Image (cartoon, rainbow, N blue to C red):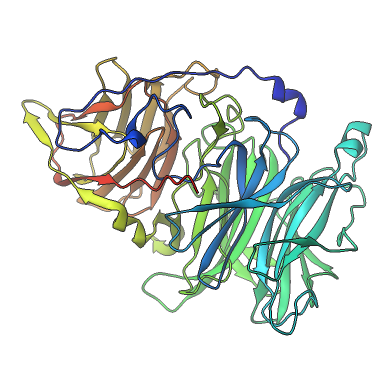
Amino acid sequence: MKKYNVFFIGVLLVIISFGCEKGKGKIDVTDKISDFSDSTGVRPNFHFTPPNGWMNDPNGLVYNKGKYHLFYQHFPDSTVWGPMHWGHATSTDLLNWKHQPIAIYPDSIGYIFSGSAVLDKNNSSGLGTSEASPIVAMYTYHDPVGEKSGANNYQTQGIAYSIDNGASWEKYANNPVIGNEGIKDFRDPKVFWDEETNKWILLLVAGDHLKIYNSDNLIDWVLLSEFGKENGAHGGVWECPDLFKLKVSGTDEEKWVLLISINPGGPNGGSATQYFVGDFDGNSFTPSHDDIRWVDMGADNYAGVTYNNVPDGKRIFIGWMSNWNYGQATPTQTWRSAMTIPRELTLSAVNGAYILKNYPIDQFNSLREKVEFNLSENKDLVATENFNQNDISFMVPNKGFELYFTNSLQDTLALKIENGIFEIDRSKSGVVDFADSFADKPHQMPVNNLPEGLFEVRLIQDVSSIEIFINKGQYVMTEQVFPRMPYTNMIIKNTPFKNLEIFKIKSTITNE
């Protein structure tokens, strides 16, 4: 996936030194992982980050032989965007990641932009051996020379393969496998196996719409159909497609879900990911609704895609936790950007509409340690902790709530639901002056379809982010925040609530 002009590499880097204050609660915050003065800046405690350099989109999400592979857009030589590689990490549980050597490097054809990976179990490509089925990665080649010259065919599609479960990679000798007849933005291949047609299906975005192809061998592709010129949001370029089938919760009905990222044009400015629910017949996709729907209405969840070949059949999603409005200027030093926590996607029927929910994977709970916390209750309820590595949940009534995180430096992060609107205001949340668009206005999300009575609010906080899940993922917002020291107070304003729980999250930072 494109991203942004090399001229932007000259952006001023804001380097912030943070202090750390021990909290008043019983949570242990003496570990070096919670120290804001760490030399790497505000590196998260349990979100994936690159070992160094720049990172954006997740790529090639695939499971094989006990390992979840996470590839990602990576420029190891700078903390701003540059010639793209595929970085690589692996995990056995989607929580603890081991850094691997860079998987795919740029070459004479171009930079290595976003794409996907599949396990070619039956060696349909002929790229494997009698002993080993290949993992085949398909990605976009981006030719910077062609782009600079003003050509419109500088993005093509190539493949690489591994026969040792991702430890080493070889590029296909006859790349590219899909050329370009003159489409400026032509990228981000997502490949999957369709059981109904016994074909490989390929999704490619072409500026303002989607192209769908099929193949018998992952090399020779036939264009089947197009979708989207008259559907969905079109405030920017379409990117990072994904298509998969889900059962509607509590029924035997199945529907197809299409993800399309868009930049700009998100509901709160800049980057965001929309979704469509409908039907796919092996040839074309038909949506079942006309309205625009968003996977996550926060400012910082973009380019998310799902895993292929997951053993339990669940649909697991990871997104890039940033926004192209300011992603190259966030206050970090030796590395930049993080991924969202992995989330399970499910489909529910809510008041006659198919709604895509996303919620932390079940195994995330294994990182939680319940903690005691100090409460004071006058007009408001105040909990005191170091709120920089927590999972907080409570039940509130449909009428809404108002909540603040604060510290002794008067950094304040404000959240509320009022009149059917959820709002998060990070204008005074800490370091906000690295980009005008970061905190220029509160971010809002309509939540007018909540159940009567109580519903769950779940807040997952890391050092520099908050992920908000309302009613088990019916409504979701992801936001970066950069407090100058950990928030130490959580203030719930005059709101009846039940079942308040606070957990500390174990660190998953690794030096491996």
